[in-house]
Image 1 (cartoon, rainbow, N blue to C red):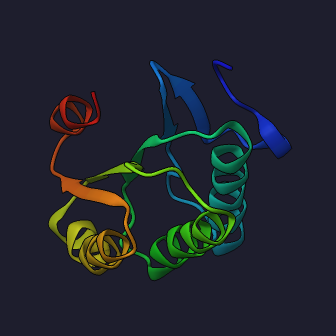
Image 2: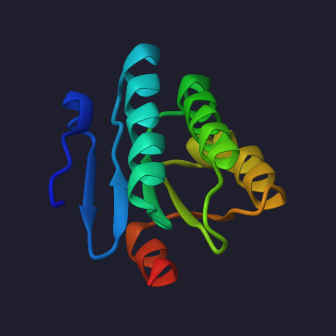
Length: 124
């Protein structure tokens, strides 16, 4: 399933047992599409680990991520689900801090990281 292109989405790829989400700088509609495809793929393929590379502090990205997890939680995700959020800047980290807290309270192991290497070590 390398290089996932479900629904024409080029921002998702599966490697080494986890899904990588790289939304980049996108419009609100593109972010919704990316995270919707992320949720569908996770539900359909019972994915239990993901790395999200957040580079934009626009609230649309956080809202789209929350919407995706709402869909996934309602569908029933496996126990031990792990989400590693890599924040590109302190502003991005601040934007996603509440999402991390809320997802943790909902039973998702979610953590914020300053770099990808730390995130990958934690996901392993």
